[in-house]
Length: 432
Image (cartoon, rainbow, N blue to C red):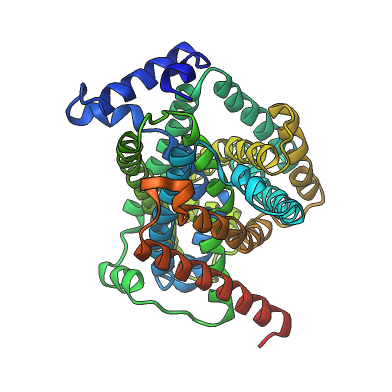
């Protein structure tokens, strides 16, 4: 499909963005302006890296272990840059996404298995997002969790409506919500006044302190390297700007890599800020914070009303934005693996149901958030290994095929994640 053909199916604003991107590829846009048409997709993916599950795992980690697990945040973010780059590259090179290529290349039973685990991951994702949005409303306005979760669902429908107006309005709306989270935690870190020496030690000296820290490290990994956005990013790029030649596809990827570096850099800073804030304000000052409600109350008591309100606002923005991204990913998974499509709003209603049921049953919200992130970490290999296989296939990728060094690094990442999850499961079951 040519760029001209694609523009026929785009909304007016989208067509203008694609034409601007084509001008950049042709060398008719210079300086920073040439990057602007390509900025946006990675910010949608980045929402998943600062969702409410990150709040729970990072704050528990900082409160319980100080700066000890900050290195996990750093390594996870480096992994995220590498993995999201591969996902975007696959969409650019092939015009298809991970589930679609999986359906084409794997046996039917394998495809069905991949679809089932991806749906289970989608449930865990929605659980984190709805609990986060509901907790934000509860903390700020005193609304009970179940009606607050319903309000979160309504807002997620409003964000999905932006998608019907084109990818630019959706990107702008989600980027604005990401900005709210960034401002909130920039203030929280300023209030926390972290110890520079301890911060650098935690960032660059890998350390674990027993099974509890291992559980949280796995949760941080699951909350940072999110399996559903491995599917999503390839889909976001597959028809956004279509390269007409190998050289053009390489240029598109170089532009998109800038988008990825900026968006993942922002997400990494926010994740680090969450942990640093908790370490600076909560660690060693009494019992560790085990709930987000406790973090809000402790902030209110020790840092003032402004800090507590900004924490709640950041949590609310995170829950609202990530709930719509989870739905988009679920739609891509079903359509790709099964070649079946249901209306996006029906998909939203279906994926809301388990999260609302868990909230209605009164399960502790923070515990549910942390466990949802551990579940997500177990889903990473099922998304990552097919992605790696496809990106290493020259027949599929052409000149964008992975270099051998990249393939080796990502296989090492995949093996490390699988090994960490297996070890955690063994320690949890046998209590050793």
